[in-house]
Image (cartoon, rainbow, N blue to C red; front, top):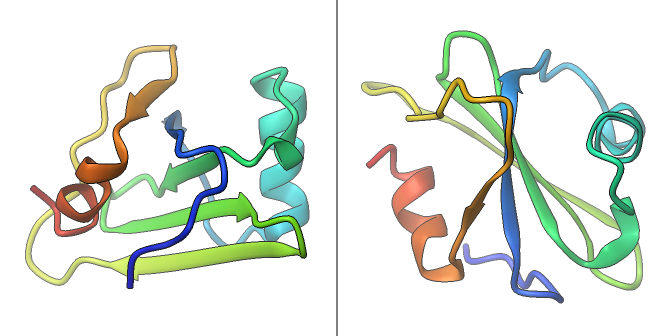
Length: 99
């Protein structure tokens, strides 16, 4: 499944996130921690502490969308830097494959 991100921009959140959070809590992270509009059409990827789960959040003009994936054999590669990492749309499949 390839998500249709309206703006075509994807951002990987820099810190580990408790992925039991719903879309409301993840939106609060985007707006309060990142100072960005959650309904901008950008997609935001959050990864858990063990880097085996990733959640993609985006607004598709009609409602909130969440995509969750758990890797079974590898870990997501996320930088520990305190900045957002932008992914190109073509890289999203590689990211969710754990490459």
